[in-house]
Image (cartoon, rainbow, N blue to C red):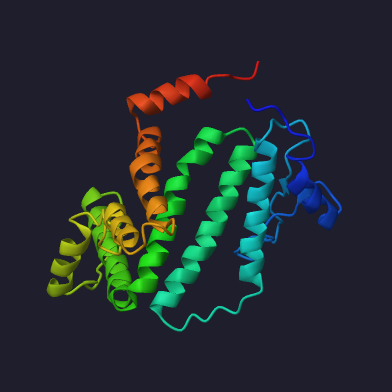
Length: 252
């Protein structure tokens, strides 16, 4: 491990503490979104001084980034005038909350579990980018996927024999059902965009100049990070090896 550099790893932490006058940063989500209990969420605490270099500096920077994103959202007047803007707004909030969950897990010692949330975080970024470029398709597909998934879910509930049968009107017309199956698959297993992550990432990377860094970013995630996270998420040789190496130290 790199030897700790004097006054380096505490630079960001010191600035954060100086602004807030304390060693913890308030929870980015102040209250329960239901507004019922209005119980504050647990604060994100800055890593202790003895935290290994350079992780204290990096985690502190990540916490600062989270609050920057939350402050931008709090101070912004969102104009949810159409489906595309609504979806982007929803994805922004979900991404910020997912990012906060990653930080909580990492700070509590659940690094392997935090890593699993990188995939949905990246999916949100990919989807929001696709929405901003395809507002007309978003208008059609977003609602169609929701109704298609609900129709499949209702059919499965009734077929199971567990749930009480209810007379429901058909959610989709035959033409809509055919289109939904073509776009989203027989089980709605594909996302509502009708595109795979790899297809969307390839589309975005090809639109970047090779020298602006964007193409490298998309390709590096899909070719390097994404496969590793997939293997870690599921019961695979890589995932099981990581469990054996990182998650078998139990408290006495």
